[in-house]
Figure 1 (cartoon, helix red, strand yellow):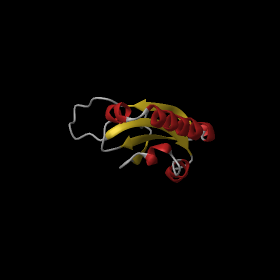
Figure 2 (figure 1 turned 30 degrees about the horizontal axis):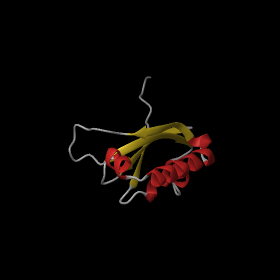
Figure 3 (figure 1 turned 90 degrees about the vertical axis):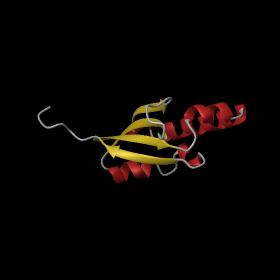
Length: 103
C-alpha cells in the first residue's frame, strides 16, 4: 500500500472556522467527519487534525490526514464525498509519500 498526505485547504483558518461555527454547525460537521471515517477506515492511517498558527502568513492549509491506498486515483475516489468539501472555499490536495532510496 502506498501512503498519501492529504492537506485540507480553506480561505478561513481552522481556528476561525471553529470560533464562528454555531454549536449545531460544529455537531453536524463532526457527525459528517465520523460518518466519513467509519466508511473509510481501511484507508485511514492517521485521521489527522486541524492545524493552527503558521510561519507563512499566506498559508491556507487548515488540516491534514494520512491515507493509504493502491494509487492516488483510489485515494481521490475515497475523498469524493469528504466532509471538508462542504467548507466554503475548501479544497483538498493529495501528495504521495515517496520511499527514500537506501532506507
